[in-house]
Length: 239
Ligand SMILES: *[C@@H]1O[C@H](CO)[C@@H](O)[C@H](O)[C@H]1NC(C)=O
Ligand SMILES: *[C@@H]1O[C@H](CO)[C@@H](O)[C@H](O)[C@H]1NC(C)=O
Image (cartoon, rainbow, N blue to C red):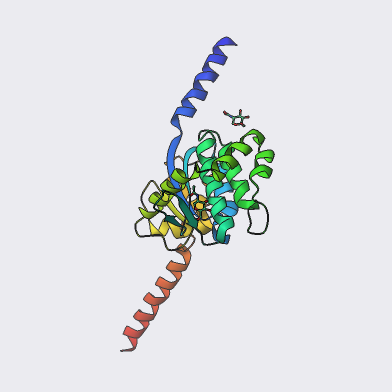
């Protein structure tokens, strides 16, 4: 029995150590419909499906096409694509990302909730989402950070990282794997994020990756390519 427990314990450690790390950076705007849809339909379900199999090293950068305006007295203000409510959401999210434990997946489910419920019309769900994630005590810290000047450094850091993107960001979300922007990954991630993550996972791939091709366009490409080849052969025969 004891031997079994030791063996079981070692197996767990071995599994934990063997988890492959995949880094994913998401550049987004908290109130943008496409960013919200990406979180809800792609990022969150994939994160839950793959949590056990890979160490998804998520870096979330809420900023997008926002602008920071600097004044001579060191004061700064923001302008955001979806107006002042989005600037507030940028600050809240930057603060939550700083304050919550990055190793704890509560951070991701909290951000997922903020992205899902956040809207221009309603009060930002800082507290509502904290309550549903059992982290009510952080609400006031996150709000204090977003409403005093603590947000300034955090949001300026997000601006800096967004501006480092090459090619420059023109729409959101932008999804980058392993710190290297690839247009193909970025586009496919919007409709099949899980497929792209699975592409990066070494074999043997987890069961959940079975049948989630990272290339939903492949059959179409083959069809078009095949048709063009057929037509050009046919034309040659007619000559
Ligand atoms: C910073 O600028 C904003 C907008 O002009 C203003 O409301 C705020 O009071 C200023 N804060 C400081 C500390 O000057
Ligand atoms: C993650 O955070 C929650 C809420 O603060 C806490 O209850 C939980 O124990 C934490 N989990 C880990 C693994 O630290």
